[in-house]
Length: 391
Image 1: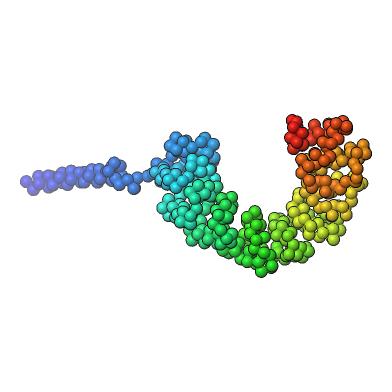
Image 2: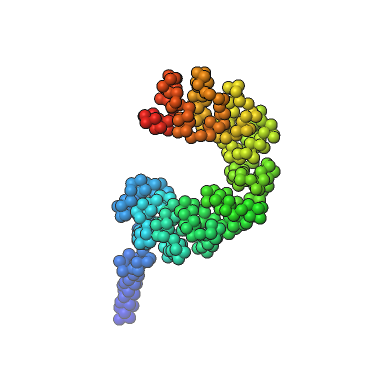
């Protein structure tokens, strides 16, 4: 009897152990594979970004391909749907959305509530029109990732600099990327420094509207640019002063020294170089090849020398093929035929527009000089339009 009971208990123990293992196995199976498991713990289903944009939101193949070259998958389509829907509700057109995604595909994975919405609200609260907001963000989507506090301070600083909301809206539509910089630490102190140098606010503001990038240097670097321009002989009272700062700031010291060496090799003295810079700083922004070609062209005629170029430095900035060579050929023909009543000044002749040049030096003589007719047929489109003919 005792032996029977022992065998029975042992059998039950084995069965119960088997049942326990089966129960545990089933529990693990249910735990990891049950459809009732909380959705938040299930892996998100990523989709190829090209398929997502083309099929779900009808983006153009061009945009889809551009985005796919940067971002392979949309990891959370529902989240990306919310972002695009919010932007549409905020005034973004399909064109704006496509441009924004092309410029920064990762916008599809940004945090809507903590990254995108606060930035949009800043612009809305400041009174920016919806279309302007859409344009600024679509062309400069990095703004969405900027610090909200810095973004607000930069907009307010820029609006204060320009003195009007209208100007701020207009400039930021073109130069929205400015807001990715801390304008309170760059543009504001640089403008104040220029004012302290005696440059009038209206002149500074006109320059800011066209060349805002110049004012993003830190103050130490900006003051060094001003110092270099002063040392080159341009007074702070000159209208060329801000232009000089822009030109000097557009190239590093190595490129600047190469330009100076080129002028020296072409025969310009130190005084000549300084004179050219004072008269027309933008001449130094012309490529080295062009400076060399124009100088050699003028000197090669034997009619003009270095001194003449120093007096008319604008000659170095004109197009060789569209302005200098055609006009020099016309004038040469008129001289050869003795049709010019007085000696011409090339510096002055090259300053006038194509229409004016055509009316004064081509049209009156085109019927009498066959070479001028040929010249006209090979001339610029502007000349052709002036004569009512096809170029």
